[in-house]
Length: 241
Image (cartoon, rainbow, N blue to C red; front, side, top):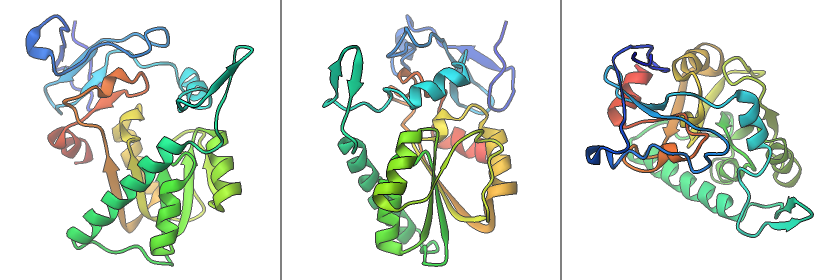
């Protein structure tokens, strides 16, 4: 019995056999088997790889608000972890991702964000990508994340207003957004086509830009139990179309 694709809904899917040497590039086991077990499925129609079974949304939100981003510096005390208020590794990643964003915008001759633009970062966590946006472009910024601690930090420490996610497929904002970024976030979204439809209709301005950065399909993307899909250039184009 085939598994219907969770993105394009096609029934032309193939279960990846982890014992087959030809599939060695597509890891089929979670790094946290105690949290979630799944098999990896390939869709012959849209070209994505996805989990045969998604984790429960409540468990995912609990994980995002728990130890999902714990650093190597966390201290365990009486069965509880205490970590740095600033997640240094993730802060550095955010600045590196902004440098790439800036380079691509300039190389492709796209509209440069300015002070009047509203810039929304889905999954912005502690807000360091948006801090770089403010520093370089002076744009208005809005952080969006399931992590309450991340939103509180970006608001209090960096002065970046935030929105704690309730439902990414229906949440809306006070005004339409000129720039939307999903930096290693799109692979976490359970209904990519539904989300993109909502984004186009209710979130993104008519002349707005969407920037997506995802892990490489030829790697360990699905090893992370929160990565529901993994894409290549072709499959990402298919989903966007």
